[in-house]
Image (tube, rainbow, N blue to C red):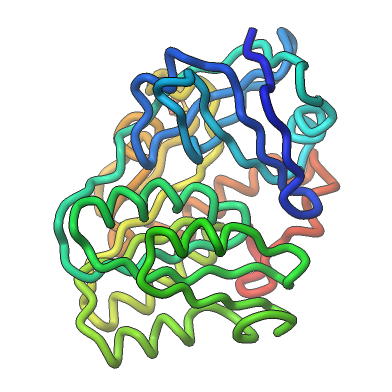
Length: 277
Ligand code: FES
């Protein structure tokens, strides 16, 4: 059993939990994830590790409350326990001294970007971040990313804070005016697809952290398979990060839709940019 040591409601529907999980904390790396089962009859869901305290033996997760399991998870409070936490899973983010790296994140994925930006900075990169939320009310993580980024551009959909609209415009401006050596993107699949389409025009290598449906998280069920180039990959063991220019995004989004009819509450989060998940 894994105790919830701290709970913070970052914005409506996005929650941060610090969990006592010393075994995971000891080995966690940027870009890795855990599989959580809230109780012994619960489904298994993947959540990216947003931070860890090796000495203290804890990990931080940030999740979006969108379906039955995340509602159940969000109903817990400090001092409650989660039945199972398996991890760290997946390959860590490839960190190197690339030069100038642009970190692009949207929504709850901003939390997952923070340890990546930190590692990139520690490796000697110049880190620039572009983050987006629908509104000021739903934005979090700006201050944390500022710790590791030379600049942070904030975009809100309604213009209530930072720039208004979508994040492709500031990304394109950056690519037009600066030498960018690498782009890393985390967010909804449709956002990552659009970012990949933009960076391809500029020939900038881009990695994306994929978010297919997962079950076991250890390469055995085949549920998380994605097409990268001409190959089938399992996101849980071969990824979750892949060359964004090689990913078959439409296939990924179609597979992510498989069970959306069984979760009526998710429709409110349907992407208005591509009308798909
Ligand atoms: Fe089962 Fe990846 S989640 S193979």
